[in-house]
Length: 68
Image (cartoon, rainbow, N blue to C red):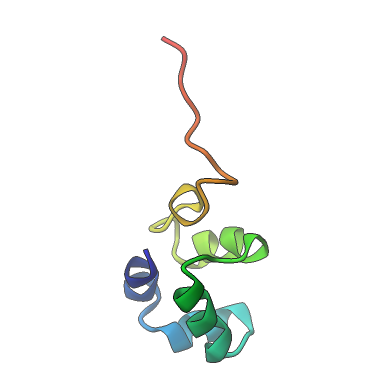
């Protein structure tokens, strides 16, 4: 997932710049394997929906089932 975010933004540095945070914070998320809940919607917006909130945090944003 982090590679997909990186591809959509161009680099971790660009993601950090657009979020207004340091590159070290993004590196920390990558090491932990989890994006903080308060950054998910911003990243979805920055990537123009190429990386969805569900992909980043399915625990918070599960896929909604459509009733038949």
